[in-house]
Amino acid sequence: MQPFTKLTGIAAPLPMANVDTDKIIPARFLKTIKRTGLGKNLFDAIRFRADGSENPDFVLNQEPYRRAEILIAGPNFGCGSSREHAPWALLDFGIRCVIAPDFADIFHNNCFKNGILPIRLPQEICEQLMQDARLGANSRITIDLEAQEVVRPNGERIRFEVDAFRRHCLLNGLDDIGLTMQRQGSIDSFEEKAAAARPWLSSAPADAA
Image 1 (cartoon, rainbow, N blue to C red):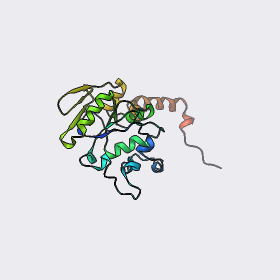
Image 2: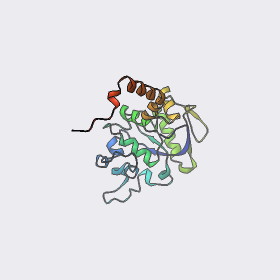
Image 3: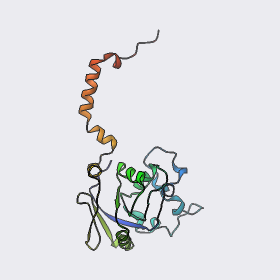
Image 4: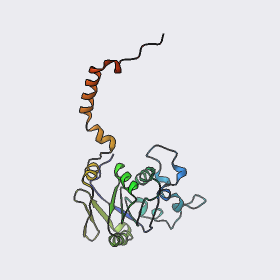
């Protein structure tokens, strides 16, 4: 998993409440278990028209937001099903951080496990950041995870809180597998001792008669 330390990028405003996971990535695109390739179908129902052409009114189809790395969203973002494909699709598109007044719990947890930083900030601050984002490429927002600050284009620093363990994992690019592999030495030692104590468990099976 790619570490998240400091990000300065274009933020896209999405002033919609209750954006559920089916709106983020519709169920018909959940046939893959790969984490890549889903970005092209992100927000499919509102990003594209019925004939497959782009909806020019949707923010991610507009410049400079096609290159957005930060999403400023409305309340209850990521509600609905528990599909992990939702953060996969956001990440594959290029979104590394989502700022909203609040998130659905499962989506919030899945973001951390996949290298996306979800930041909870009060509604009025999110509205200020949306106004910043509407300035486009001339308004870049900085997310400093180590300092736990959002830096507005005018230099104002906004403090946010992240669970210490999750912050550690993001800063070091550790997903669940990465955390496990930090114990590789202990795992190897245990397996060696287990094999020595019960060699019959690790021996190759005899050929059938």
